[in-house]
Image (cartoon, rainbow, N blue to C red; front, side):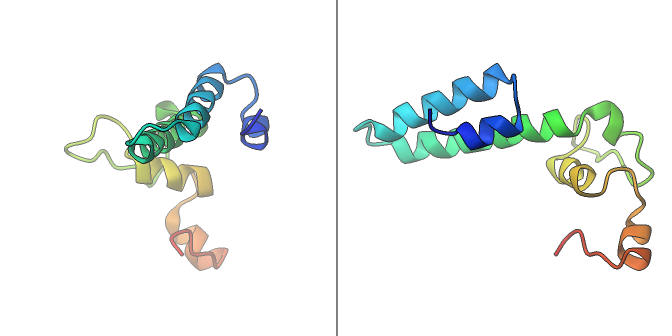
Length: 103
């Protein structure tokens, strides 16, 4: 099956497997908007992975977390930061570890 390498990274994830199988079916079709549908799949899988690797309960406990006024929970950017640096303070990551998580 296509997408096996990706699915090995997130084992036992039936939703991701279903979405990827559908993506390959759309990609092989003659559907004139298959590119649009493919983009929607990528966004859906990316959001799913972000939520799986950065649960609200963990992100919201980070010292750097700030509830954004128009957001309902952590933003995609905050989830990505959590995946990269966990709960470590941003100053520690940039000044002590000398890493730029945004580079």
